[in-house]
Length: 397
Image 1: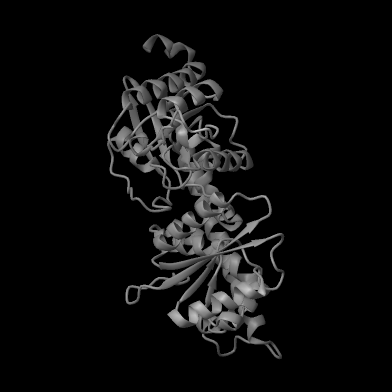
Image 2: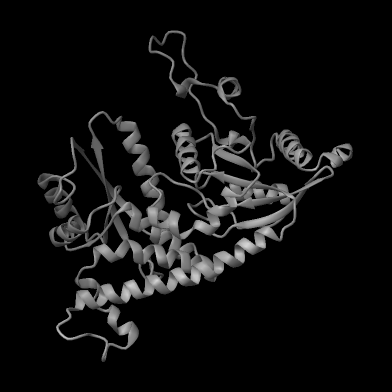
């Protein structure tokens, strides 16, 4: 397993770098960097400063302009910063050039997310998935720092005639990728068999952006103790629990959270985990309504579900964290047009009740507010699916 960036001995310091492209609102860039800050914190780093540059198109050599490179370089040298983290995926050449410029470790958003997954993976299956994703990301980005890899397999007799260290490293990684894929294929078959053996119970999958409260809802509905924490990607392994609402049993699964720019390598590696979503009879889409850009997060999840070909399933929309929702009451003397920051919770309820094609409910899983309404909606949807599958059982409900 590739070692995570964070260590117990030293709290690493970092600066964040973002780009504001033409036509992009400043508050959206701030939100993206807030999320990157949260990712860095989850990985174990302390963010010291943020840098943002307005660009029409990213620089092909260093992603950001020369002036900004020099500004960041001076800051990281003076403050002895450990990491420079970019909010976009960098090419192999951009990584190399930036490492030369800063003489510091450079991480992009994808690498940071992969590192968090490496720290969060607990089971052998999750660790294998993450390791595969890491190697797939690193293969085209090999630099001199990877010449230690041959020692993992003994070194002597490994290198062929005239073969350079970098070519050896590539071959080692390709061999490792092939081995991990075979391991995952075997586990995928086992998990597929397990899913088929669960009987004919209605299957419900909790989906949503990362850190919206899916695991808390899972614990509340199933009366179980699924790990829940106010950090990104607290859940990597799918947890399945049998839930009974009134007299109707069904299976409820808690899945890995989605995120903006979810690395392609992770989507591929976590195929079996995401199969819980593909094969579910219905979805419970959880949204953090207290987040200032919850609508964009909702769209990210909807887009990912479309990629998974799972966006046509019956869906219950659950707006969570109403206890944390804040709004600014507009003064009657304020001539500025009404914005979404001026919407009260009741305004949002009316808006979403009217425009959503799916049933929706507003709750606080933390304080168990409106939980009974959630149970009723969940029961009705699951009952309809069960009734269509087993018409003779309708008299039971």
